[in-house]
Amino acid sequence: MKTLYLVSKVLTFPGAFLKGFWEHLICNLFEVPILQRGYLRDNWYCGHVEHAAPEGKKRFWVLFLPSFLNFVCGLPFVLAGGLPLFFFGVRPADTALFAFEVLFVYMGLCFWCNLGLAHQRQAAEG
Image 1: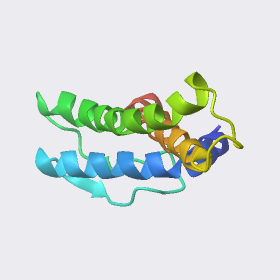
Image 2: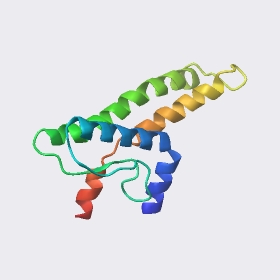
Image 3: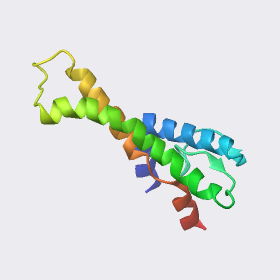
Image 4: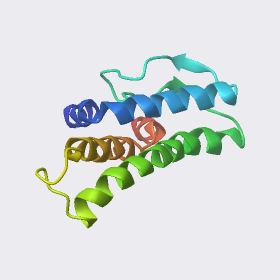
């Protein structure tokens, strides 16, 4: 299962890296101690920043904001690439921008595929 998880993180590395960046930024903003830096690692924390457990109301924001920001960042990419491809029926021969539209959909899906919380895995492991 860990191998499948790591393969999915490698295939969607832009989203994993951005999610780790958001977590790092939010932890610094709320003054939550960061235990181990590094966004792309070969364990269950790939795409996350390992940090101390936040106290009180900080806990909600530290868990919610990185995922929300990844969703917001992915939305324009999916719309910019997905609308021409799926709703307007653009094909490779129709436009020179087809490759960019596919790239935009890929980037948006990468951001959306990395919305999960590492803390769920940490709680499950004990």
